[in-house]
Image 1 (cartoon, rainbow, N blue to C red):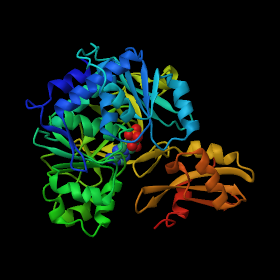
Image 2: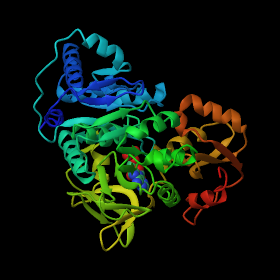
Image 3: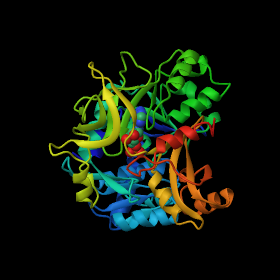
Image 4: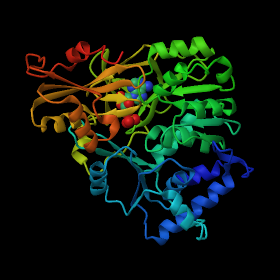
Length: 464
Ligand code: AMP
């Protein structure tokens, strides 16, 4: 039941076929991947990593980083990827909390060392519930939580997606997503690996590289920002998209205007899906069937989905891809589950009589900037400590490129530019407010709570 056994069982018959296609024209075959993973597994074992140990990784996207991920699975250890934007202080928190046996920042150097090792051929036997990966999701209370994903969670969701999105060995996936997040690491890579497909492996989203890769791609997966950037590129037209059979979007809401513009230009409808670190993919628009703008589609097979309290409410789910809990936080885990075992997603939405799901917002005011989650509370806590600031409210404002941009409204006085540069030293760049507004009072409801919806309306035009 080790996920890596399942992956190896799905390798193409002809292992000389490329798994990774690189922008410089080079490639890595399935045979090379298999050997590289086995050598990396040997090296991890030599260094004393044991089943159940966490292996943390923060570093650039590379084939070697994927080999490291798969080697960690192979030996039954637990992969802990960290966002490359995290600062030292943030990384320290994760290392303290997860207590990894190893923290790796340069898998390329590691692969060079591993090249001296004989590949490890065994695959550590696992139960479906055994931990495979720990994915940290920032907490609204400021404390990050590690979502525990098992071999069974990942294997189940991967097989469902291969089926739902019609992946075959003939597919070539354009992979420009980061691999520190479930979207790039699990959703995209697993679909390709479980169908023996190839991946056009780009280090990140770059207009020129994506345009150059598109004529060879049959599937592209992206966050909404990828699609707004493509639409803003004058070179992107119907012909550029013609070879691609499927464009998938997720991690943040796809604007209906983006969906419509994309269809008008290319004749293709982006397939939007919805998921989260704690549950992997939950719903998807259909491959064969109507893809509706603004809807995230239907619950995937095996997912039981319901709306709490009325027509629109918090989405609750149950199913084989739902995580087993937050790392060393049994109380938090219990708090976010109902008595009858549903996970409370925190997303607010509704479901049509025909089963289609629509997401209207986030219960906890999560900001999603370019596909990355920003929890206002974390920034507010730091701002509130700043001299001259009495109180702060951090909100997301519509932004043409990032979908949402972080902004802060603070009671007090100060120098906006200096405050922003101080924050940059303490927080990952994507979390730092792009604007700070100084005010005398914040709007509040009768319970004394700051009305962030009012603030969002007041400043809505800031980045337009
Ligand atoms: P993460 O755990 O980083 O993957 O973030 C998960 C959150 O992203 C979800 O709880 C949703 O709030 C949001 N999200 C993901 N996909 C979509 C989507 N297609 N539409 C709206 N929100 C989404």
